[in-house]
Amino acid sequence: MARAKKPMIWISDAMVSVSNIKGFDADVVLNNRKYAIEAMERNRLGEVQPEDCFPKEMYAKYKDKKEKKQPDLFMAGGLWTVSAKCAAVMRQFDLGEGNLYAVKLFQHDRTTPVEGEHFCLNFGAQKTAVLTDQSHRIDKPYPNYDIWQPPGAMQDNDIAVSASALAGPDLWMDPQMRDAFFVSDALNQALRAEKVSRAFKLRKCIVI
Image (spheres, rainbow, N blue to C red):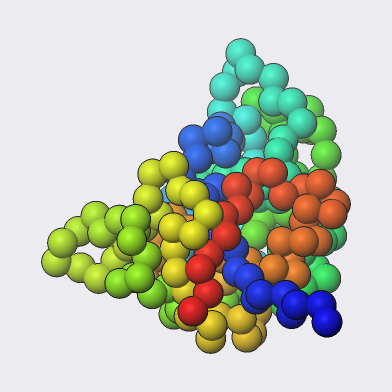
């Protein structure tokens, strides 16, 4: 008899990777910086945001640099952004109340488009599932606050999560954590199958 497959959950290390940060200015920031930055912070916590919090256009910051084809997941203008191919995969899964909003990327001249189609990602789901006392390499940057973040050079099985996280949306944030998001095994497999998972830097969690 075939052994039942062990349930799996994955954590992304993308948010702490400098290589994923790209130099763009978002129109919403240029138009109303305070409002846009507050919305970005809420988005990083997995809170649902209205579409008008997200840019319609972004512009390359540097005049002397031509922006080439972007990764399948990257931060632009303070917002996590995905390629059209990646967005097509994600739309097949439960994003909670999250969404994907089309955004146009331009070179510094604000006229010449950057190659490809892109979508800003609204993280719209939360699950409190990280078992901080069983995640032995987890970091607690502020001793007086119950806030954690992934360890440096995170590896498989560094983070433990409750089996309760297996239910519900396929993409979510944990309000206990900063600089990380989680994906279901089904979404992980789909991203890998379409060869768009590399930038996600996914690491296997221990499910208890």
